[in-house]
Length: 401
Image (cartoon, rainbow, N blue to C red):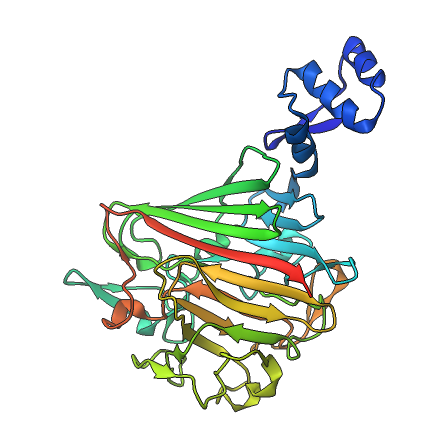
């Protein structure tokens, strides 16, 4: 038998006397209460019902080249929404949500096994850092000292370097289960000098699945030396579950964006989206203007300046897939969001559940500070100092229409 106590599974067979007491219960609901009594757990019926419906499970997802095991955790709410998260890269490997007809579907791009991630991938579902997005020429100056970072994107540094947070094994800890949410805390350590960054940095990311069909991502970090920090989750969403995302309709609460040069580095300007293919202040299909952004291959890879400014948790984006009726709303405390439409998939990628991901097979809404902020004094600052604690929150909320 298996029941959840907090976030950990209770497994094994109860003693004969306890089993007899359980069998004497009139129905399944009462049986759960009886079983709780046998184990000395809380007997409040509503709490017990909630705990029975919200669940978290764990299993071995695969093994690293050195033989070390890596776990994957399955979070499930009472509406049937499921999020699967692995210790490798703190990756969101799957999110299952129903469409308007109640049919389940996986709405993020990923793989069924660890080996596929280890061999390399376009940051599917991973935490990107120490600094997400690009740093021009892999260099910055902080407190009078120049630092050189790993260059892994031409001349630039991207998403933390050759071995960023997307390739770390995070330490996972399931959180106490409640009737309203189920959570998983993951933490990692980045040593002073790693990928060229200063400071010993400790990062904690907490994924929480709520009974409101929200996947909350809480970020916290501390350092012993001043360092740039810009964390994001790099999930690719496809609310149809397959095919491309060109018919998805996107609204962004962003009147401005940061123009980029030919190497995708911001020029430092902040311009209005009005009259450009980057105007999503009215819901617009992704594919209607994606071939007019100037990028090659065509599509979007742009940072938008959110009207909320990162001052408080605010609605930043709303994505709709008309055929399935699925809706995703994005709330964040970050000042920007990077829209990326999988322009650079060189060829179709075999993914989870046998689905093949074509070019434009998913889109990212990476809540963040602006790219190359460490080199742009007029952009929101990204320096974390020893006396401070980095805190950020992003929420992805799923529904149908």
